[in-house]
Image 1: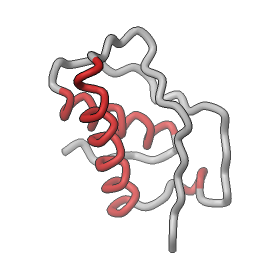
Image 2: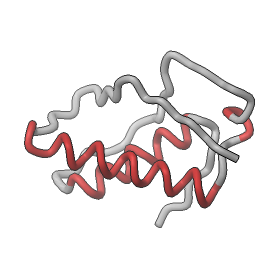
Image 3: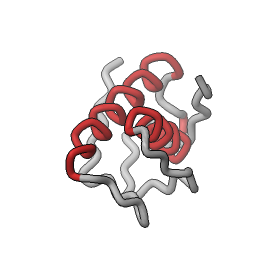
Image 4: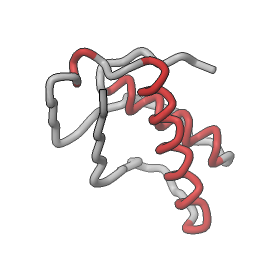
Length: 88
C-alpha cells in the first residue's frame, strides 16, 4: 500500500524555533512520521482517504534538542491521526 501524506503547514503554537533549526526540525518530523507509518501502519481513522484542516497532537514540551523535539512532534501528529506511536 502506498500512503501519501501532505502537510501544508506545521504550526507549533508558542514554540520559538530558531531559523537555523527549522530545516533540521522538519527533516526529523518527516523521518519519524515516515518511520511510524512504515512500522505501525496508517491509523484506521485516517485509512479511507481522510482529510482534515488540522490535527491536534495535544501538548508536548519543547526542548532545545531539535532531534528529540522533532520526534515528539511527529509522534503527536501520529496520535492526532488516531495512532498510538511507540515511545522509543
